[in-house]
Length: 88
Image 1 (cartoon, one colour):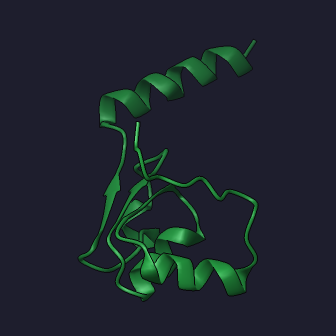
Image 2: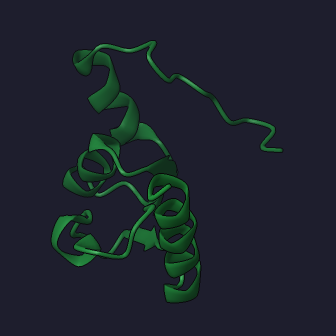
């Protein structure tokens, strides 16, 4: 685990979130506005995206932000699983 990590999901208002991201050493998150806020205030971040499609259009655009996406094989396996599940 992370000894000094803080989970503030659904606990902050916008006026509290933006200064917190600006002061953070690193933001780790999912596909969300926090990634774009981190890029805007140049706070380093790592963000997990669930799909590869359009990630390069919608990702936070700043060199301090990294995006992790599933491999093509992982994404195709999810697609095949969902197709079987919903086609019956």
